[in-house]
Image (cartoon, rainbow, N blue to C red; front, side, top):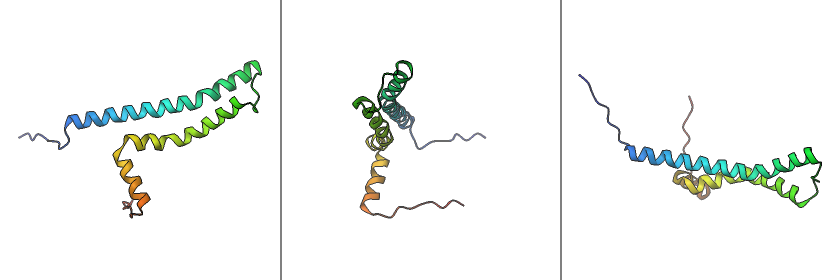
Length: 103
């Protein structure tokens, strides 16, 4: 006797979640590349041509971009994931969060 397992989650829901995960990952990667590439260019220019002074506006801007890279991921998740939005709202409103015990 064979019993076929049924799922309560439809395949379209799973594929939509997979697409959302891929799009979010691409957004995170593009943000990383956009923030890190300018400083890498400045480092290569400095090593090859000794052409970058760390007091110039361009170099200072690249350092700020590196710092921004650390901050953009939560905003990307906030835009893409409803669960993240609800969690932030609950956290900011002061509701107690239930934490599962690790045994």
